[in-house]
Image (cartoon, rainbow, N blue to C red; front, top):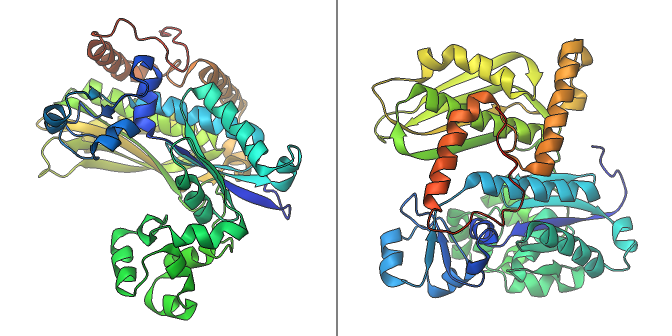
Length: 426
């Protein structure tokens, strides 16, 4: 994707509202407007609806305690494949409207919105309001939207009217908004930095931008100084359509009970690799260096890991899996250990367009394979991220599907999913 050059634009930030809980409620409409907690399989509250938050339930609260103190709350297990579906769908919709979109995390995206886009509708409120209706109408859950001159200010804006908010943060309102924004809630200001700033009498974002820049320079590293400038409206952080700043991407999932079944563990790795490669293709990226790991059940034992460098850049999960097979039994798996999670990290990400032709597509077979991946992605876009998968992922998907059905046996249906289930391809 090409950047917008010198064309004027604003930064849009889209942030999911109680994202995991909202995704779960999307397939359980009977729970809409009720307190819901997600994380039953982990034994702690990992996410909750706004109704549950208002009761006083916080992230990390033990599930047994939630049951004791809040019997009216519905407690559900996590389904990360479902959340991945929503994340992919959000990115796809934004990418249809804007050339530069950054998939920042599973529940949030940034985008550059050209001034010309707003002018077609007459105002930012109407333009972004129509986009908000399209996204929420398609996905069935709510997001909060913030528009501002910089990424940091856009994040401030998206938080202002959660949930289901839409805030256009104009220069005339910036000082008033920053005056009521605690410094610790600013993106990039961690707990320790907030404590340090508090000792200087800096309690709000407005206090921070009014603090002399030379003193900021002398006391803090470059990232904090960049936040100071961004809050002043000076754009330093770009929308990274190719994740240039991140340079890596990870897909990891835990499971229970712990296992030492090599076929199941390899299948879990296969599924993680498929997820990572799908993200690469969605963002036009490729890699040739990646790492895989198995995390043991006992925390005292170090995780088993391997880093692999491929001869060529790729977006194809089959290339990664062939390399993993070669090291799985020698460097990763130990039959004496029980494992509770697997993961993959891809490094050195580059734009596919920037890879020399003789490296990326030097053979007719590779070009055909790229076409096949494109076709699979089109099917997945229509039918859901898990509708087509590698045979090596079958064990993982089948096990998790059975667990999903068992957890939902008390329901009369597993309907109202955001995308249709069309069966498995063998």
